Structures are given as structure tokens and as C-alpha cells.
Image (cartoon, rainbow, N blue to C red; front, side, top):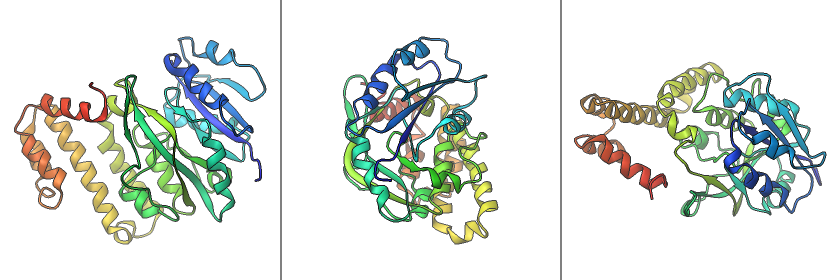
Length: 308
């Protein structure tokens, strides 16, 4: 693997607004051995024309026969990829020019299946925050950490293809909100995570992002994920008591926020009652729930950069 091919998976559904900027960030890589697998998920804008304006065998265009959810689209794109390493770049995110150069060599070190880097969350006006500036991510065999306190941002990882081969499935098509979490947690069962302590990518924050527009799916899908892990790992909830509890807390927080948003703050407080003494954020949400939800929503959107 001295100079392995890196397949860059770009899934696109009407992503023309930022697409050229994303592609250019791959073209600018100092590491030369890459291909872009562009999966056009039935776009109706100028996405196809923009991608096809780039010439060369490393630019590979595929039109989906029908629209699918993102997880299934990624699975289909991976099937078309040829690289020993696989990476993902959404059409609204960016890579810095030395990303591949810096990350690829770490696959020479032991059973490394995933290599990540630091990243910056930004909007159209400014950089908002650096993901790992205050606390570096754990490395090595970090299944527990991924399970209980997931820390991977999708524009950063590169994955060894043989690690993908170890999975009986890649992205679970049942998930639309947590497909990345499920995918990397399962990879973390057998493979190490390595980290380059440099900002080498940027994740664009905007209100049309799926992350912000479909948050009500999170608790439903996360419960399904826990059932899945119970079937995958014998005595899962007893082997990973702390992590299981952390995931249950996240479900409760999301369900409480959804109830509050739907006009039922009393229900939100009932959901959080078992957690509010042991968890600071649960206690804060309980206190804030006496205020109008729009106040919390505005502050939260301002925190993540959706409001200037």
C-alpha cells in the first residue's frame, strides 16, 4: 500500500450549489492517486453537468436508476469503487489539499481500518468551531468510545477496503439519520482508528442539511440500533453497561426536545426525570422547558452556526 488508490465517494442529489468547490478540493490534493465515484441520485439541477465538465479517467459518473436514501446510495457507490482505500466527501463539504497525503501513510501501522483528521465546521460567512481543538479523539480499538460518545465527522475518515469486507452489510438502509454512526461503530469492533492531528477538512453547516431537517428520526432509529447490537453481540447491554446507558440518555434527550418542540413541555420533563440528577444537560433542558421552545431553538441554532 505504498501508493494505494483512494476512491472518493460523492453522493449527490441536487447538490449543484456547492459541488464545484467540493470537487476542486479533491483535484487540489497533493496525493495524486485518487478517483471520484460520483453517484448522481436522480438530481434535477445542474449537478451532472458540473461533474461532467471535469475530464479524465479519475472522474467516474454514475446515474442512479432510481432515487434512494443516502445510506443505500453510498452502498451502491461503494460497489462501483476500485480503490484499496475509500473516503467520503459530500457535495457541500471540503478537503484541504494535503488531506490524503497526510492520512494515507497511517494505514501502514498495524490493524488500522479507519484514519480520521481534525475538521472545521463552517457556514457561508465564517468558521464556527474546530472539532478536536479542545479534546483529541481516542485512537486504537475504540469500539466503546464510538458506541457511547460517537466522534467521527463524515468528511474526515478514510477506510481500508478490507475492513469493509469484514462487514456483512455497509450502510443500513433502514437508517436515514444514524447510518454513519451504525456503520462506524460496527467497523470499530475489529479495526483500529488512527488520527492525524491537523485540520484537513471542513464541514458546511446549513439549514437544509439532513442532520437538521430530520432530527425526529434520531430516537426511533437509535432504539432500532440498540436492538441490532443486542442481536450482534451476546449480552451486549451487560458487556457495555456505561455505553448502553449513554445511548439511552441521548434517546431521552432527543425525545424530550421533540416533545417540547411539539408543544408538550410537560411530557419533555417526564421523559428526563430519571436522568436530570445524573446528567447536567438533562437538568438544563428540564429547566429551559418552562420557556418557549423557540427561545431554545434560536440559541441552539446560533450555537451551531445556523443563525448569525
